[in-house]
Image 1 (cartoon, rainbow, N blue to C red):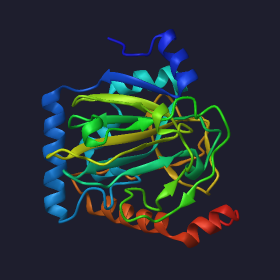
Image 2: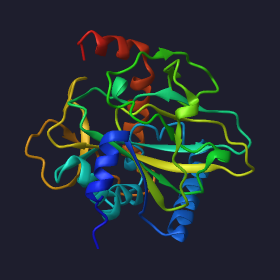
Image 3: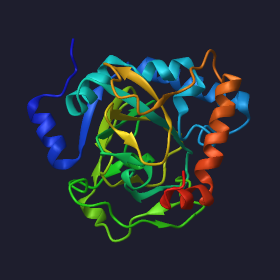
Image 4: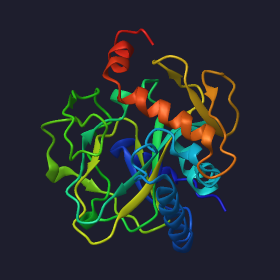
Length: 275
């Protein structure tokens, strides 16, 4: 059974810059995903937010399988068309009773994509609601130009550089509340963020960053994973494929990528067209 968006839902996405919600997996499957993530954290001795921020899916075959889930890809195809690549994914695990937040930002300001034909699917492994800091978006913010960001490096901000858009009206925010196993979609240019977790349990989800196959990288040659249709353009090299959970080669790749992403020198070089 297709889970494509209806014409009305696609029209609302085009106008608002987001869609909520569809079910991809059962609540039991979502609970199993949480258990797997927490087992990986125990094995690594670190929170999943540390390295699984750029391409979390290459840490494990089961996460790569989720990135190819038909329910998610049907919805994404409704917006991007039949030929789809996954260029990134990010684990978000917000601790219980934590003030840590994600500031208002647009991914398009940092992703280095041209054109911005890209959609994020946010898949919940636990309940995600206002009380525990669910994803919130600014409706219609994808329709204008990219907004100015300040890199604050706030230690309470879960973004690597604390990139922040100032001056948005929080009263206009839409809160994308999800039950375990459900997902939302938002455009790469939609301003989004989240508040702290005021509950006694973690809020965990996995975001997949999809793009149409014709999209190019403005930051030099990079990698992606074909997930549906065909890649007729060859703009991207292929992501390494995990053979097992925490595949050593893939984890080394993740560590190197995360280090380079955090480097201000790399960011400055990218802006100067040197990488």
